[in-house]
Amino acid sequence: MEITIRLADATDIDTIFDIRTSVKENHLSRDQLAERGITHDAIREALLAAPCIWMADVNGTAAGFAMADGAEGSIFAAFVRPESEGRGLGRLLMDKAETFLFQQHQRIWLETDGASRASGFYRKLGWLPVACLPGGDVRFEKQKKCAIYLGGCLCGAIRFEATGPALNPHNCSCKFCQKHTGALTASWVEFPRENVKWTGPGRSPATYRSSEYSSRAFCGNCGSSVGAIDDAPTVALLVAAFDDNHAKELQPEYHSFKDGAPAWASVA
Ligand SMILES: [Zn+2]
Ligand SMILES: [Zn+2]
Image 1 (tube, helix red, strand yellow):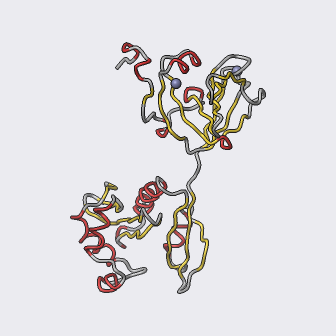
Image 2 (cartoon, protein in one colour; image 1 turned 30 degrees about the vertical axis):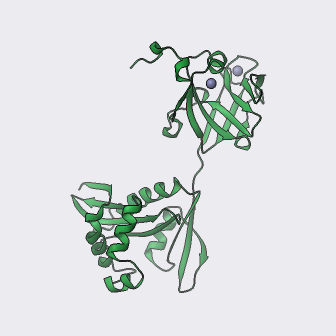
Image 3 (cartoon, helix red, strand yellow; image 1 turned 60 degrees about the horizontal axis):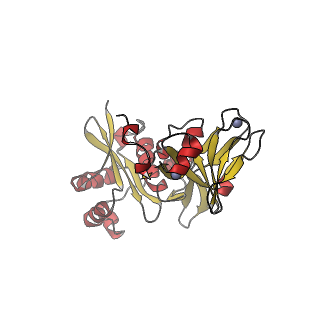
């Protein structure tokens, strides 16, 4: 059995209605859907506005879909054909829809019948019931998990714990960064000051006032560069000082003072 999760396009709309009207729980006919404003044209419009529907194909045939409302931050619908239940399609579809919504929202929501099996399924995926609504529906919410990044200097005296999201990932090859790190190019990410805790035995790093608005931070014992502490409530950390710097969100989005590094610095 081959399962593929992919983005839907306009040619999937009839199939989406097919799946939606095939379910037993929370069943609605096409007419009932139309009464609620859920028509072929409405779905087409939503699809054109943003990639917001994912299809689950089993051996090349669509067996389920999930639809998110990016503006609202909600899961609008998630359905799997009865004969394809129990294959983990719902979980895979929800994963896509949640990831999409968490790119724009810290907290996302959905509403479903509190007595339904779906409601138990959402609980298993970490959704929390937050309100009972008239008619037996329950509002569920899920909060974005914050990544925690650990790192520190070479000797271990300076340790940090930074709570994500990691902002503004970029490279810099300016002279300050070069002198500060001893590297031709430094990779940086930024955090609000209150999201960075200094947890090592050396407490806060030593600093050197490098410009009118920023201080370079380093270990007073081993000399490792760890970051820059701005007067603005921002702490920039050097990605190379992280214990693990493979996370995708740490990938630089641009390169400041690129000309500061010699052309020979990049080796393909
Ligand atoms: Zn050190
Ligand atoms: Zn720089």
